Image 1 (cartoon, rainbow, N blue to C red):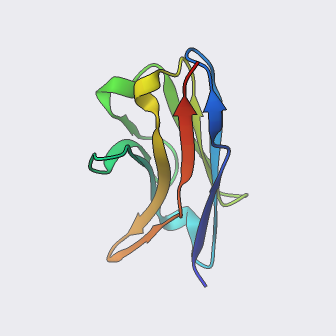
Image 2 (spheres, one colour):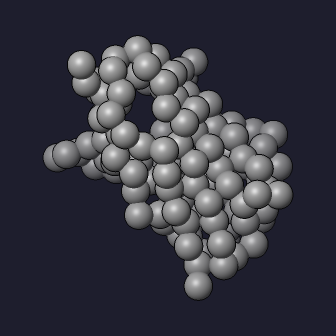
Length: 116
C-alpha cells in the first residue's frame, strides 16, 4: 500500500521556523520527483518546492525562495521542507507529492498556522 505521511506542522509565530517531514512507503521512493504543495482556505493548491531524484535540482515558488529549503534522504524514504522566517501568509495545509511517469501520490496534509 502506497503511503505518504506528513508531519511537523503546527502553530508558530511570525518569523519562526518549522521543519516538515514526509515519509514514503509502498513504492520506490528514490525514483520519484518529490514536491511540496500548500493550500490555504479558498485558494487553489500551489506548488512551492520540488526536488529531483538525486537532489541535484531544486525549484521554488518565488514567494518562498530564500526562506524555504527542500531536501530528501532516499535512504530514509523521507523528504523535508525547512521553513524559516515564516509569515502569516504561509498559513495553509501543506502536502507532499511523489511523481514518476504516470504515477502520482499525495499525502494527507499537515496544517501550518503562522500567527501571533
